[in-house]
Amino acid sequence: MVVDDTTSRLNMATSVSLGGTPLGLTLDLSSLEYDGDVILENLHLQLRPGQFTCLLGPSGVGKTSILKLIAGTLSLKNRYSLETSDGAPLTGRVAYMDQKDLLLPWVTALENVTIGDRLRGLKPDYDKARALLKEVGLEGAEDKKPGALSGGMRQRVALARTLMEDAPLILLDEPFSALDAISRHNLQSLTADKLSDRTVLMITHDPLEALRLGGEVMVLSGHPASLTKIEGLPPATPREATDPSLHTSYTEILSLLQGAGDIDA
Amino acid sequence: MLDRLFRIFVTTGGIILIWAMITWATDLPRFILPGPLLVFETWFAKFHIIWPHLITTLSEILLGLLFGILAGGLSALVISVHQGVKRWVLPVLIASQAIPVFAIAPLLVLWFDYGMTSKVVMATLIIYFPVTVGFLDGLNRTSSDWSNMAGIMQAGSSQSSALKMWRLYRFIKIPFALPSLASGIRVATAVAPIGAVVGEWVGSSSGLGYLMLHANGRMQTDLLFAALLTLTLVSISLYYLINYLLVTFLNWQSEQETLS
Image (cartoon, rainbow over all chains, first blue to last red; front, side, top):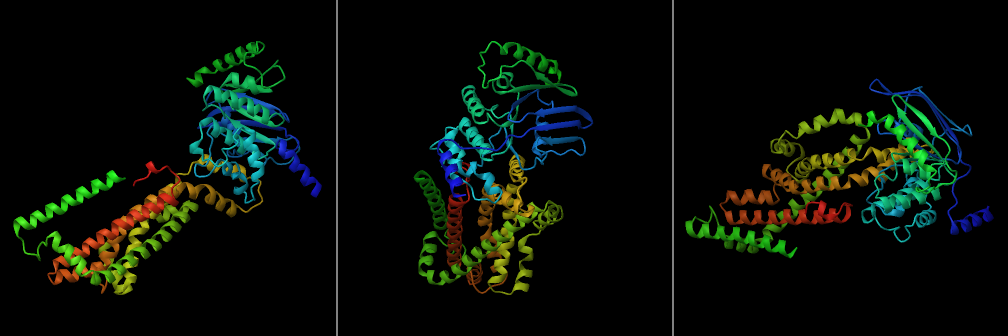
């Protein structure tokens, strides 16, 4: 036990070791309706273990509802099933990152990163939190309150908080949509780097963002919406947006999204 | 800051000057309107008489604040945790504000005697409402995004749901509501002296309100004014002291967002 402890501490000095074996997830949804209007029908979404999946779609198509179903903050009775690859329940094994940073303005960055442990009544691991803040490029900002940080820095703190949860499944709800172009680009690279071996489901509006980060890219469109998987993507992520082989995929995504343009208008 | 002090000095100085000119020009008898100079003279000369009454009233106000804030804070928490309670209790709370405290003051004196208790109850009643409403408003305005985030973080944790709820309040809802609580306490501090003094008017043997009635009955209008001056100074200092404490300890918002 003592030896184990020392090894983990030594590992921590270089990079924070995270997670166990990645988790796979299958979501089957028979129907989702709002005020009698069927938005989603017979949806089958599979997240492969360790895969970064991007879900694209126009607003109002039901992307966030899917994310909330998986997160457990939206419950439908008997109209969906969630199956994990290891058969155990999903409860408590999800981390969620919103497009808003949701930082608590009255505590420091460090305390924001450790909020999960305190909400669970556990003693926070401040060493790990510091190391994570350092990894997202916020060394020296640990004791600053969110009000003193820029939008990009705040979203970095939110990313560190999400990583701190150390969950097998990570849900990202348009996490970069409120940022300027440069911060967005930097945070995309950082996220791709930090979440490379995790099972991730990210929602986005932006085809280029999906093509940069997604190991798998799916488009949700139509009414009721159906899923289309984009085939033939180069395997390595993050991809460069200038990569010419992405051009056909980009055109395909745009035409899929425009086909559903009447919903967005 | 210096600029503000200067303005306060000029306005109050102006009012005192007008007051002095009125008494000088109209030559009213001193038991109708004593001049400012006479009031200040009386204030210094009879401060040993005013002092014990000041202590009584100040104690009533402070105890009223203490009990009012405790009761109001607790009520807001209970109502916020059990939204069912809210539907039953909040209408009654709001309706109770339609009853003027002045009207129930005689009852309170009847029930709690002439001593300090009835005045403390009176002040507590006046303070209770703004504190409850302010704090409750803050607790209810906590973003549901935060609650959802906390829910995801707490899911699968083995602690009881009561403990989860407590930690949600302890780390998110209560800190978020503190500035609203502070606004409530600020309003409460401004009205607390009214409760104490009205209680003293109805029946007492000590306190600034008692002293004012007593002086009035004996045509000692200068002493009445001196007591009034004391009460004003106490109220203003108390307000600024509480405001300072609130800004220092309860507010996480930037200072320009708060009233000061």
